[in-house]
Amino acid sequence: MHSIREPGAGLPGVTPGFPDPPYAGRPTCARIDLEALAHNVRLAVRLAGPDRRVLAVVKADAYGHGAVPAARAALAAGALKLGVATPGEVRSLRAAGIAAPVLLLSEVSSDRAAEMTRLGCSLTLYTLAYAEALEREAQHEGRRVVVHLKVDTGMGRIGVSPADVLPFVARLRDFPHLVLEGIMTHPSEAERRDSPVTAGQIATFHAVCGAIEAIAGHVRWRHIANSALVLLENPAGNLVRPGIMLYGSAPAPDLPFAGELRPVMCLATAVAFLKRVPSGTPLSYGGTFTTRRESLIATLPIGYADGYRRAFSNRASVLVRGLRAPVVGRVCMDLCLVDVTGIPGVAIGDEAVLLGVQGGERITADELAAHAETISYEIFCGIGPRVPRVYSGGPAEHSDTFGSAAASTSAGRKS
Ligand SMILES: Cc1ncc(COP(=O)(O)O)c(C=O)c1O
Image (cartoon, rainbow, N blue to C red; front, side):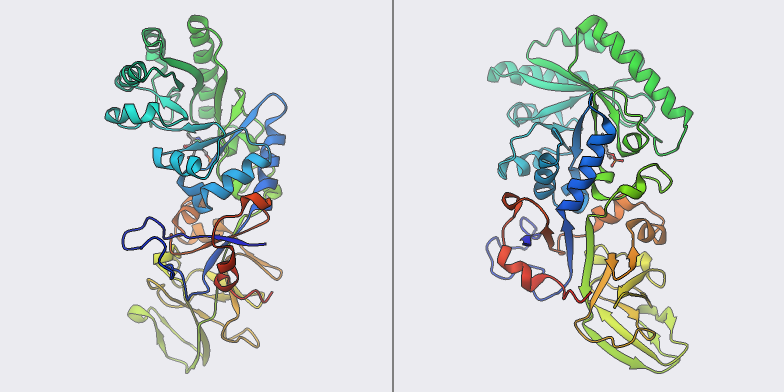
């Protein structure tokens, strides 16, 4: 049973309810295996151990996998909470009926404090201006706002510095409508094994938590661990915040348990056009590739506007009939070319897998990331809204809309 989510909804120029969504007429899609996601969540739960709970990070539309289906699958597999980056992301989860606890991982502008008090989630806090604004609005609304205090133990991004944390917490006593539910920090290089920086961050975090609790009393949640610390079984605190591992990718290939992760996304399309060209034929913009033999060239309906990056030009491969076909010439906005000369029997409509498994071959997000000198996170997040996400493997109630459209939108599954 597959279901599909309309990716263009809310985009400029897309008419809600218009019968022809922006991806119609193309076989390009990202298949999302929610059972694989559930497996990865269960691994995180296991590695976190019995004394810790899991907050599944589903920000940035669950790293491009679809926040609502991913959140539902993660909760069903044992996650207790969800983490997001923006108020809009909280609203999307709530609008879909997800009632689980959500933590908004950054502050937002203080002039939105009134809205924040009504958002129905826990809020990350690290400036007095935000605390004051929240207190004012919460008092006005007659509500309590649950906050997690973020401490900067070395990431250098957001958070109260350890030197300032005690006066900050002392000041919070003046804000009776703010409930301190958590203390958190973020590691800057957790994927490096035996990093003294991480060890120092964890030690500082423990010290800060102890000092805060000495003046503010017991705080329910303490958390630092991202995927790397979960995989290293070095989670500290009593809550962990894995993101990328839930989507089947390890923050570094040599981390323990990396081999146990199951990839969740398969980016696929189908051969749209085939041509045999003589040796010496320049291909695509700028003629950066010229055939050196008579060649069979397949055109695929995916390009950099879909997140299949221009940096993959003349570097990446795709899978056709279980074999690797190199990308030749520049990747264009909507199309790219692959050399299928060595692959017997290629026909229009054949499935082409750009990320994922076909036959015995596999292309990982790390492999693609290396071509673009980036990380798997950016590859996943970059798969654009024009690419429909087609879900399988989730519990029945996890299906999204457009279930009947899935069959016609999925690429031909030949392997
Ligand atoms: C505050 C916070 N916690 C947890 C995570 C999850 O990190 P990862 O995807 O490396 O597990 C992130 C990711 O950026 C984050 O910003």
